[in-house]
Image 1: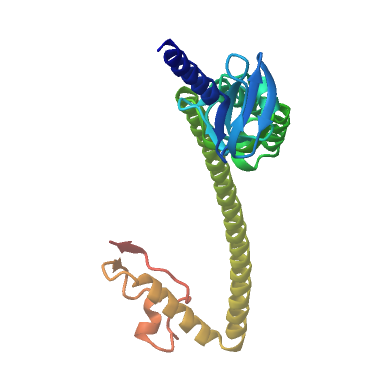
Image 2: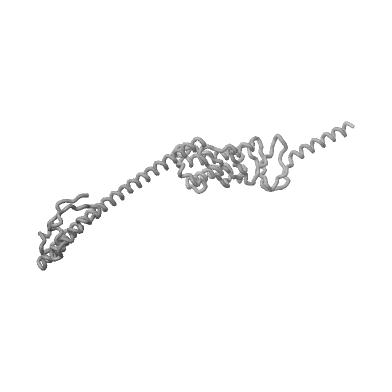
Length: 304
């Protein structure tokens, strides 16, 4: 009876030891056999494998697929012009050298992603710190940030990690800095508008001044021409009068009297008080004016 019990116990122990030495590797995993805190073997082939039982050896399974890490709260970066940016950085990576990965980050699998994200953020912070805010309009195609990605990839490669992609899902100013920036932009726009408006007013005043000066010049020239033409007309009229008087003095006297009548009776409300025998009306009394006084006699008075 005791032999049977001992055999059963021995069989159970053997099964437990045997099960602890066997393990299966999935095709999506790396298996790292650790002995005494050091990497003893890396298995990258799927299937059933054997190791020494604990505590002599243990197995750590590493995911060989592309993994993603991000910070839900966002990361803060400072630009060259001292602006603080809030960014959502998405980091995609995968393990390509399990031995280097385990040496760099240890057996705690939660440490690796955190350390990888820290290294990428440090490289990005260095790149963003070299750029002003205006130079980060397109963070996905910025040469400085491309260099930061290359630098981060080199650092991670030394830890057995391939940096697949680094992407900014959001890159904004902090709320308080956004308000200050918008205020500065509004002030600058207002000042620019004032300058443009001031320049426009100055240009309008200059145009008005030029127009006034041209108008004055035109009016002055027109007045001079009018005076010249008037003088020429008066001289021509005087010449015509003189020529007419020389040809027919009586007709000239008659014509001058008609002009005097026209001027005297221009206003129908005017009343002329004069002696009917006055020489002024000689052509009214006698068309020949033979008995008349001098032709340019004027009436003695006019009442209105």
